[in-house]
Image (cartoon, rainbow, N blue to C red; front, side, top):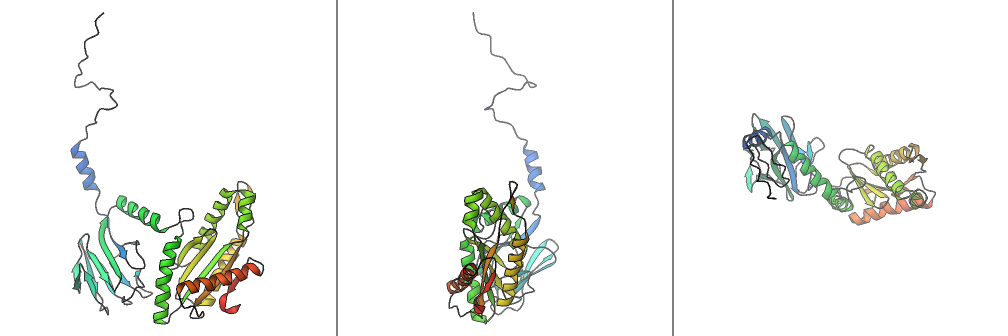
Amino acid sequence: MSPPPPRKFGPGDHQEDPEATSITNIAEIRRELDARQKVAAYVIVLAGSNTGEMHKLEGGEVVIGRGMQANIRLNDDGISRRHARIIQVGNEVLIEDLGSANGTLVNGEVVSRRVLQDGDKIRLGSTTILKFTYHDKLEESFQQQMYDAALRDGLTKAFNKKYFLDRLETEYAYARRHKSMVSLVMFDVDFFKKVNDTYGHLAGDYVLQKLAKLAQSCIRTEDVFARYGGEEFAIICRGIPLINAGIMGERIRTMVEQSAFEFEGQRLPVTVSVGVAALPESNAESAQALIHSADTALYEAKRSGRNRVILKDLM
């Protein structure tokens, strides 16, 4: 018996071939690409203490500088309080130097006012370099994910230890040079090993995640909140004295003590001990020495009964 002749497919027929290449309408692709307009302008910090940060340029004017009123605050060497501003005029985005001490450079050229092009590199001070770019929503999401993956702890979404140490070096050096204030709050979970041993590591992860959210709700936008390691966290507080940082630590301690930590129907006993150190109150000669001072205060809080706040110079 001879095999049936091969079937001929007409224009209306569809072959059920899983390896067949689908035909895409080029015109549709072009329309989709055209629809992905550059919805917003951004600057991304390529170098400096805030490396990786992405700032969306919203509104008519964005001031860059180290002053409290700057929209984008950068605390690096050579940056003035109101260093430069970025303004949007029609379809153009311009950068304008605001009489800074060290000038504003775009692609290596000193400028007073200039229209920015996609990809321009902006240098402010001695260490900070920004990249000007346009992003649609897809690119914005991708850049944010890359930033988070590099600088944040995967479990708690707090900044990671490396980012914390880099920022503390910068903030400490700045405070020393300008005789200004910087405080360090360090805290960890009391009897955390017992939580893990009694309720399991998933319960421990839940505690750390909720604790991080509570702490985030107590800090300012400019504070740096990081997971220092294990169940220990740290907060860098720029421009506030020791006593104010202690008040923040007490607010976190009280909020944790009063919050319900419930995992799989069980109430978990959670409290934190807090240690605080600061410049100029501390005589710390380095950023690492400031960490040691705060850690010493934290140890004293543990030793004297836990669930309390100890300030280094009041011990």
